[in-house]
Length: 311
Image 1 (cartoon, rainbow, N blue to C red):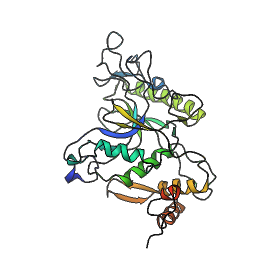
Image 2: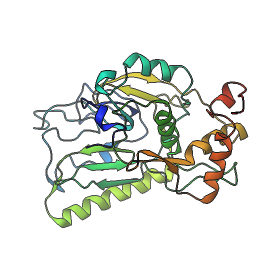
Image 3: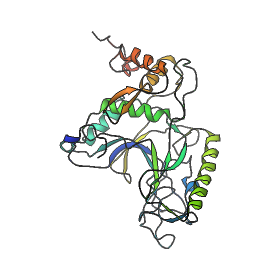
Image 4: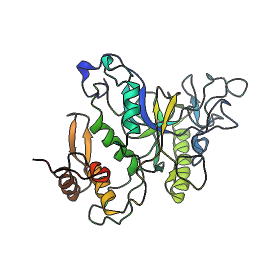
């Protein structure tokens, strides 16, 4: 069973979630696909000609424009559904363990959840533990933030954990969880022709990851010169229905904003105990988070207005 918050009250499983859309229309994909980002062409890590893969799931390639269908491919035709889940909601029915859609929209539109200008960087392409495996593109934080020097650059993909932790502290519905490390599944039931073909495929992917790394984190937007990269509310991976623009803008090395960022990055959710624990970056991470949390019950209040010390 997924590590939902309250298993006994999570009645009906569902696919609604809050996350990022990596969808991008492609000439080789489904022509009904939409473009939500132009930073990464995920076709660079696909094997549409099946040089390395022997077979995949019936829905084929989920990203890079999706599956076009006959006569270009003979998998189930499907639009690009590339995404990164930040928090699984489940359903829009509270009685099933979910959250009413209107309540999510109200919370994300209220400013209570700080949405930074999002830039991301793919960090690896991996096979998960399923058999046959899913192939995933990962968006990990490659190192911990610097809690001593608040002017130091923040690590790539810090925004994902920052938003994740805020959402987990705001929403307490029974079906809430996050499906593992931040990733986008690119194909399911991946069978390789031989072990050598498997190795060659991942070597190809590593070359692409290095190329992307040279360019650094990129915004997920379609407008050049302006970062409006935000988050989406999805009914399922094929239906990103509501977009929420950034409301927490740079500079992120300003002392008040950096303190808020570090306070959230100082913690991580433990899926086994279903509780918060200090993030395993370094000892200073704990003191930063505790110092802010001891003063304001909600760190966001320090930006929205004066807070009253807790008695």
